[in-house]
Length: 253
Image (cartoon, rainbow, N blue to C red):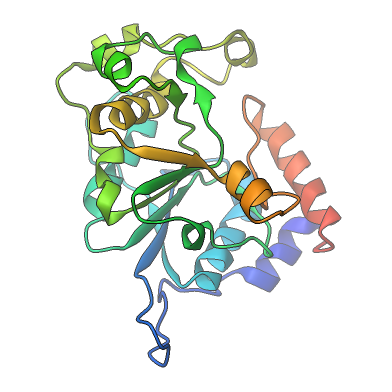
């Protein structure tokens, strides 16, 4: 099976050591790759994805970390991504990828393609179809909506994951409107989208510059894809099956 082959080839490749190459002409950036997995989240999916996340971290010279304990008293575990605000202190770059993200071993280090004033997302939504606008959105004049399954940010842009401020949880939830497809999937509630909502607000609040990795890969680097696969609004069984099939296409099964 694809699961066993992936685990054998890539599991334990990094061990959170980061980049220890002291012979480089230029001191390496200090990077970390972080994912969120609290409890026994999607075990059949994570058997496939976690070894490849670890491998990718090793490849780009990043420490690999898993957020596995909640520290916030909030109704949704997706809010635990905001641990990144403190975790990112002392790192040049923090790369966050959801635990169910499949990373091709040939994927590039996209942080090397932008300056530190840019926050990278895999893609950018138009926020006004899901989130009610406020004065920060209106003032910014931009409608980029965050997709927080994939976020890459530097120490200059840590405010991208600044925890909730100037509002309440209930006010945030009242401003979130899942799309029809999200509702139909049965896997995406208003509470589940709190991370996308607050990061979208932080982009506008702090005037952060953003760019899509999809654009960087295709337009700037002329790649045929990003190497990242994230299946959204589908069941755990469907996700595990499709990711196994994708790994087979790579010749790892």
